Amino acid sequence: MSCVSAEMSLITSPTTLPLIAPSILSADFANLGNECSAVIDGGADLLHLDVMDGHFVPNLTMGGALCASLRKALPTTYLDAHLMVENPMAFIESFADAGANLFTGHIESNDDPIEMANAIHDAGMDAGLAINPPTDVETILPYIEAFDLILIMSVNPGFSGQAFIPEVLEKVKIVSERLRPSQRLQMDGGIGPATVNVAKDAGCDVLVAASAIFGTDDYAAAIEGLRTA
Image (cartoon, rainbow, N blue to C red; front, side):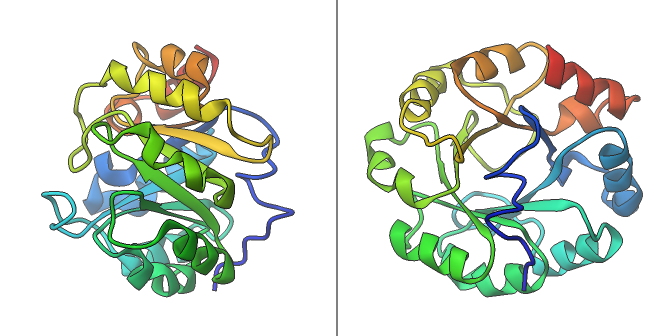
């Protein structure tokens, strides 16, 4: 089971903000352990794992076994599992057992958000709820209280390297006004030097970046640039 606790959680009790979360979807999978170690050594706060089932989104990616391998290689790193799947509750126990710290499912999935939040917390993980760009923000508002993190997608999920959708910034503003100090607001998709400031100004304090970090020759400089832009 994941050893994360509410008192010690990077999400609910961050020592500094914003948090920078490299998405390993853009890493070199033939050299994944070294790539992930390098971004953490370069100043990243956590690792973002994009899990896709080929049904909820038109792509198929990593599962619990990869999360377990990263936990073994990086025993103290906070692992953020983003489940872009039709039934995220079916995977809660397996990702907890694999060492995930944060488990995020989608409001658009088939599972009840409150039941999902309770199950994630019962499994010892922080709980996140994500919303896609086309989904009305009103859909997620009744469930915010139950979660530790809200993830607003700034691209349509499925593939890295997509262009940022600026219309989602209005969702960020609406959600950010409703969060407790212990809750985080994450943005994923198209985050880079040209978009990071508008995301932060709108209220995001956990920034997922893929190619903007892994596509550079200097991970530390890319991470620091996103944090301090």
